[in-house]
Length: 143
Image (cartoon, rainbow, N blue to C red; front, side):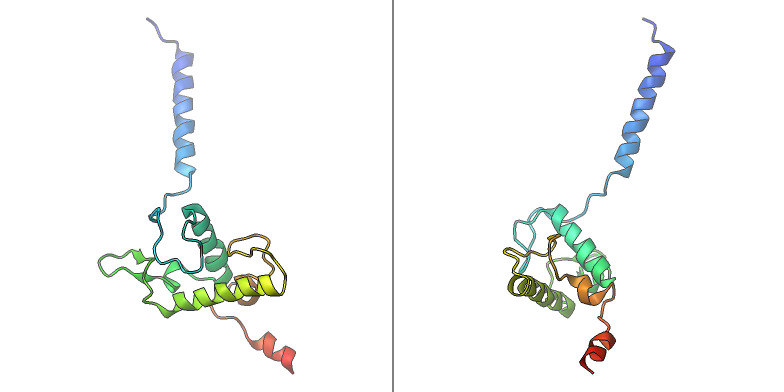
């Protein structure tokens, strides 16, 4: 049985495309399927949605990395996402509750959730990509 040169080239091209697509696929994150210690976000949140919220709302909205709120695991160099060791994590929870309350009470959104595209007030509203909001503009308005 003789294999045509065209078929070999086509097979190699298909394998190359498959490998290329696999290489650009988003990386798997080392998050558990069941998250522990979620107090504001839904306990059954998908890992994809949680990752999007953390990247869009927190990383971009505050210009910080995960380690800003999450403590390092004592046994490894990885982050312990369930830990409450850093006070910034509880501050973030309070901010999420405030954000949900503002969107519900003042903008009358029926079911405001962190990560919802329809929210009127988000982290970036005040933080503008900074870990600590600039109070200069707020103080200028009061004068």
